[in-house]
Amino acid sequence: MSNKKKLIQPRTLKGFRDYLPDVMMPREELINTARRVYRSYGFAPIDTPTLEYAEILLGKGSDETDRQMYRFEDHGKRDVGMRFDLTVPLARFAAQHIGDLGTPFKRYHIATVWRGENTQRGRYREFMQCDFDTIGTKSLVADIETALVIHDLMVAIGFDDFTVRVNNRQVLSGLLEKLGLAEKSTEILRALDKLAKIGAEKVAEEMQQAAGATAEQAAQVLKLAEIEGTTDDILIALDGLVAGNEKGEIGVGQLRDLTQATSAAGVPSDRLQIDVSIARGLDYYTGTIFETFLGELPGIGSVCSGGRYNDLASLYTNQELPGIGASLGLDRLLAAMEELGKIDNRTTPAEVFIAYFDEKSLPRYLQIAAQLRGAGFNVELYPEAKKIGQQLKYADRRGFKVAVVAGDRELEENCVQLKSLKTGDSQTASLSGGAEELIAAIPQILGSTT
Image 1 (cartoon, rainbow, N blue to C red):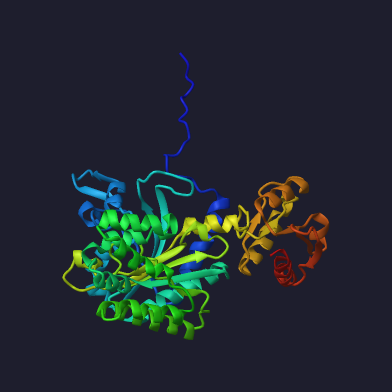
Image 2: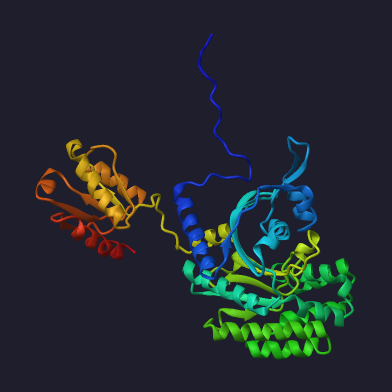
């Protein structure tokens, strides 16, 4: 009888993935950038459970998100579901804790969510969202600040060519009221939201079939998409379209105030533009809405979206808790950055590699590594005393930028060789009196490798 053990095939579930270092490193850098920008505006971190009671999640997004939810009975016989976004748990969280937190409450939440959707290129059943929201105020200042955070986030990530497109659902709702389509607003707005994907003719057909709009009513709604020109041109055209409808006039007024405020805060007019065709698919948006597109890759879709949702928490509390926020599309943005060559293919977070020559000199290598870490550098010491060629091949493959090379002769002379792994250039740095000369030389080499 064979004692050979049966090996388990290593594999992942369909729609799920492992993240190797070359993918995880830029991912973490992007998350750290988002965290830094959010905190710079005073947003505080929170977290919520992966599992919620199913009644908390059901009916809060759409029929599709209900179908996609991972839902099951837990060991306590409770009907539970895994969160499909971070906004619905936020509404429950705010309703439960706002008495202790006070308002306005500004939070960011960077966490994993799950949707059992059909997998396709770049779409997975487990993915991360990077949200920020302001709860408990209807002030337009929160809307303005949301636009500024999105703008600053894109700049901090390293993009110059992008557009934050802004609209206001009250403009759309006001126009629909004027046209007698208020009761069919959800169907109309869902159709309008597909304009960029399917074109005006098919959107008009969908408005007529799904919402019962006449051809003339559909044409009037689609006039929104035809509005072009400067911000002032668009606002004047909108004034005419919604004239006489209070809701629409308020929406146009908010767009006017928001664009003026962001301009005063230094946002270029070509980076924040009114786009009256965007509607956002989720039903709970009630005011300002945002979508962000890359100038070099507009076809990849919006990489940061959101808006105002004044009524979301009313499902959990009688207290009025208006909110506004947005979510960074982490995986979509990483795919775009990879396509645009904005990702450095490294598999180590350390910049400095220390070669290991002589086992008897290990304490000196450890001392040098400690001194460099104390100066703020990420450092890796090779664990085995192998030939220098093998070690440098390892360092180059991992993506180190600088190698510290010190054999018996260098250590006897109290110095090291510093080698740029990009250019191959070398220089000597003295260790006399400490590592100050070495510490000063490394940033110069790092600067030449960027």
